[in-house]
Image (tube, one colour):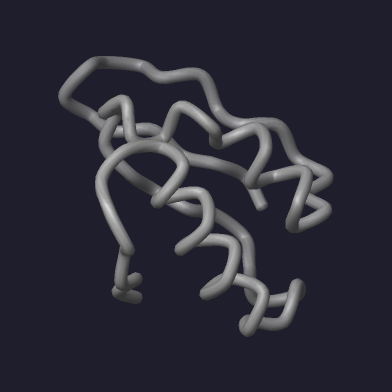
Length: 70
């Protein structure tokens, strides 16, 4: 899935991901994998907006990415 962003940084990512992921049924939103850049600093807010019941997985390694349980 690609998400068009209006700018750079975590606020733009939060707004873009929220808009795009709300179009996908909750039953299909299981995980979101991304790198650990500062653009995902608001991942907890995204999970709340999407009513995620699963917490974000703790990062294992700086190069391995992180997963957000949806």
